[in-house]
Image (tube, rainbow, N blue to C red; front, side, top):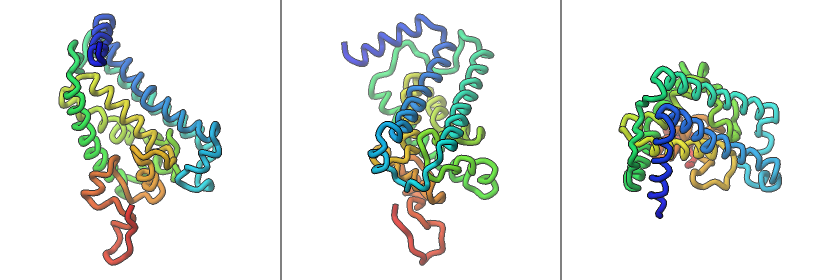
Length: 259
């Protein structure tokens, strides 16, 4: 039995055993644990388990790294953001009823080509939507009240990926990942797979280590260090808008440093 057939068998067992609302909510919780909490914890553990490796691969200097108390605070706030999003989802599921769902829980899972197409579509949609939301959050009239919280950690750690104001967490972290595929009517498994990937990418981008090349953590690490550079996730929108260089917003004629 090939992988697709095995997945189909497992999916058939799930949808015939559990109610739609239960599947929807359980998938949301599991994707956050598997995609973010476990990887973020592993990245954070490198400091303790492999201190020499950690010191050799940290992108920013030791003096810029957050203290233990700051890291603990970061973890608490990030876990709170996960909890309130799950709670909101649970409330929506409750009012809809466990027998109903607005998601595509088709008993037949799509072919690999559809999974790949959905992934590429979602990746581009997330890059575009996140870029413009992120740029808006850097506007002076908004930054102080919302996005400044996320930039508390100029040398980020993995859990800092979702250390954010609740409004930012919803608009920048949750909706750009989930909404495009939902509006497309993609299968729930496509949404879950993409969510797990993006949650891992967020943890990796904020890990603070240079050994991660895909995604290249240096790009977003530089954003936390310099603030006004690299607003996107994969670099496409920054390349289009010219925001992939430090000093893009200065007067012409001043030196620029290519990222």
